[in-house]
Amino acid sequence: MYCIIVEDEPIAAGILEDFIRQVPFLKLVGKCPDAVYAAEVLLEQPVDVMFLDLNLPGLKGLDFLRTLQRPPQVILTTAHHEFALESYDLGVVDYLLKPIDFDRFIKAVLKLNKSVALVERPFHFFNANKKMVRVWLDEIVYAESFKEYIRLHLKGQKSITTKFQLGELEQLLAGQGFTRIHRSYLVSLNLIDAYGNTFVEVADHELPIGRQYRDAVLELLRNL
Image (cartoon, rainbow, N blue to C red; front, side, top):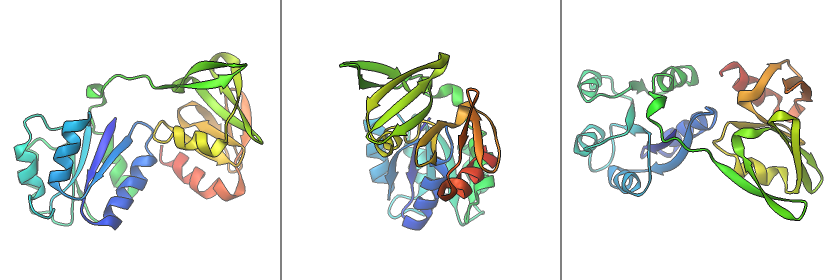
């Protein structure tokens, strides 16, 4: 689901951005410091979810929401609780009080109606065997690094090898439900069958969790 953050405080926006990147079905497409910027983004591209601060410079959050004829789903973020009742009259999904913790954030996004999201199946063409091969991103089980090459392990026990850096692939797949577990492995979160403190199991393969990634990976997996 494509989402935007409408928040004028950089620290608060950064926290929301970090939370969004940890949720496989959310993809951040914009951070807006005010309502005017947000209105431009809503006109330019599809947006399914808006994380909207109430205390914005200029046009306030609820006033901005009232101007939208077809607003996306809205989760409000604010340090003030007194507008909660009024906001629900506007059909918001949830009302998050700052400081927002990750558990409360997850409860809010699980209320979203994911059936209204645009149905898209993203893909990328990779150079393999002297031709450009289409790979559907949801077919990638995990990626394995071999120096300047990577091997993409796909569903159905297929694989392709292409000249690509794992860090570049990590950027390409940002927001698509993948996470780096090791300097040599990038894994689809949706396809992990089991995990322990030092490994994950995916498609009958046990892959190690690198020491420098361990805390972040385990925290992410515990919150799925």
